[in-house]
Image (cartoon, rainbow, N blue to C red; front, side):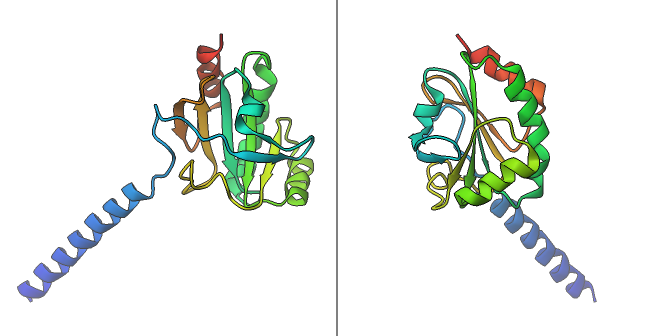
Length: 168
């Protein structure tokens, strides 16, 4: 019986360590300090552009989401608040629907009342260079696309403060 308990405890420890290692691998995102890729985007309104085309010489809050993701849907009011409170001459916001078709993203915009620019990424091109493992994923980049924040959420005020700290 003692041998069985020892084996059971050992198996549980191996499983726990394996899960911890797997979770670490699956964190995703690109490290703070790295430069974000300049991926081509298909905006819902307007001509095709790239991240640098949207960003210009301003800090950018880039959001990668999926239209069917409940957490992404719940993030809309936070992002609307950020977009309404930043000076568009000093910072920008852009959300990219990974694997989203233009009509699905347009419907998402209508249904959830997004006030910030949205783009469709039907081929998932943003996934690899930004190491997207979960959505929503948030990146704040300075004017040179150097990542200053990477994560899966923050308050509107935290996003605003971070963007303002990078604005010229």
